[in-house]
Length: 220
Image (cartoon, rainbow, N blue to C red; front, side, top):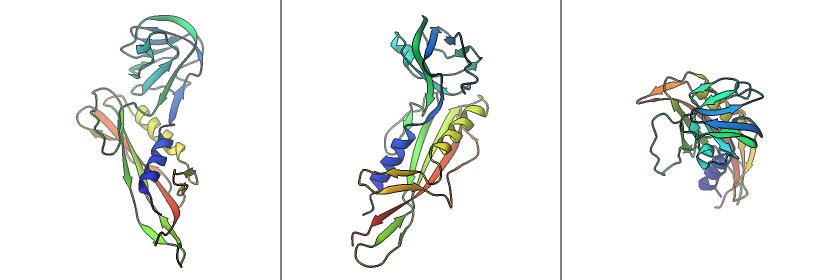
């Protein structure tokens, strides 16, 4: 039986596992201008201007909240809104799916200067694959995520978000929906990203589309 709600949620659940960059657990400090480290490199770890970073392990709760990167060096991330804290081990900084998410039919107001993402689910065509009672149907939906990054922050952040989403859904990936149907990312028309474009006011955006297929039992 076709259940697009379950398919939609399965794709969204996978999207929420997105990871672009992480320091791993190490010693980090914070100042009013951002974060600092004494070893390793934020550049090597994949952090870029325009990304939204969130922390764990900081004693001041606000230092764990999502913040937008405005400058990057090997030892420093400039992120307005931090509170000073001395260095301590066991802390992390990571970039995942932006915290502002425009899920379908859920209100979301973009905030100037912050990345955000919107989703779309296209149910797609259905074909009958086997004959007889309770034969199989094949459904070919598409799931789309559009990532918006702050304007005038260059190509890197938007491109890295888009490439990470594409990599998260490789051709052949199998996901199990809550109704037990298996979703499989298509390989004949695999995931693809669109061009970087401007969105007024204040953002650039890039869409990523994930075509997939589902075989399910005909209920008629």
